[in-house]
Image 1 (cartoon, one colour):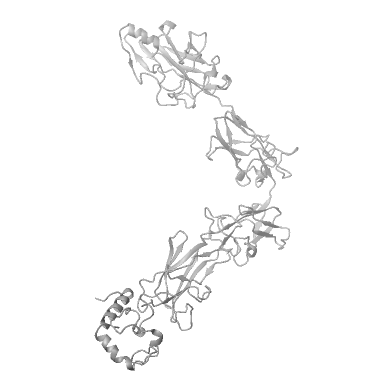
Image 2 (spheres, one colour):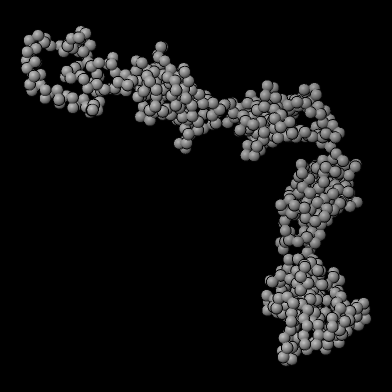
Length: 627
């Protein structure tokens, strides 16, 4: 509702009944149809700058002052019946004072040519302005009613009706544009040379920076030119339909890209996709007329990729890297190959181009792979049906199947090769070291059912195994990395219960000794990788535990299940002397005992008991106490 109507209604002591919001975000009255008892008749309401070109008045979009509005006859002809100019808020009104009649058709004509556009967002020049899209929203109070010529037709209602829905949105006719040229690159140098002809009829599609279509496609004209105009600020690229070039150029190919540094005299399109790079239009750059494409007579080519098949599934998975420096040899139908040798680039790609029609195959030199891959081998071929995502090379020969280049088949970029590392292995033997030498001697048996774990550098268990009947264990397909092998001896079954690791490194860790630290029950870290794919020296020898300091009097009775004996009440015996004792007799101590028997008996019967008690207590430190 206008300030004029509001004042009149207030003076009449009446209150308007409005449909819709009472006030805009800028404090001006909202548009709508108003009935008022004062029987006022009025139409209006606002010209605004449609910043986002949506056709709908948004809260932050400002009114436009200085727009001239003419009230014309319904036909829009003849002299103006009245003229108004929008105020600082963009508001205008026509009422009875201007000769407005009820139930009458009028044409409103809007003219923004005299406005001060420097006060608008972005300060667009007046020449770049246009009327925004009309009737864009469902709410008539917030949409523009003006057509592209600046005209709006309105019919007044009964006397007393106020129509504040005749709004006019102004937007900028963007000067942004993209183009511009497709030509036939006769000499295939990627440059637009004099005498090279334009190519009409090529379809060009505009995409946004994310690759989504942005508006309808266009086709190059007789001069090979194309143009996208009136583009909003943003990121764009152009994609040419290189799969459906005009008849005479049906199997032509995109020429090399950016041969002149992308200066508008070369080709900007990608050879494989036909798309240019992304260009950004905005205040700093309103046009880009360098998005050209050159096409050339058919060029036969083959390629394209050598990669590391890390997971061994024979498929090119995300994250699996290309291999640089692999020698690739191209052979034609005569097996001539001397001049057709290349190496893969940093991305693992290779390409043979400018090839005559013929039958070709590609061979990869896998016997001389670059450092870091020297022991790798080719993975299985055609796991995905030879669709360009698998390996095409025969593991036995290193060569692909023949491919024919001719009309209708100018390139084959599926000749890939995947390489895999040989399987890593770590093992291998747990044995009973009978003589406690730390060496694997003949006749010393393997120990079955010993739990074994493979531990990574981070301390996490990578794999687990158990020794077999022969005492052997093996971890296979171990990825490159550093590991250690650990053994769980606490739960061994008889007759090896409580056995412990023998001394390590007795043979210099040569695979015939024990590699395990008795303190940790783990071997030293071992690294599996190029040049060291297999380590079968992670052995463990086990021995009975030490039963008492200095040895025991009856070693034959010691063993699994019998680690202590508190019945040996005869005093301390030196084992070296005990070796000379006769069965059932006393051990030889190196002193004649005949004359000492009686004193000995007296000692045993008396104070000697104290000595025995003391000795038993000292042995208790090693054997524990019996209940």
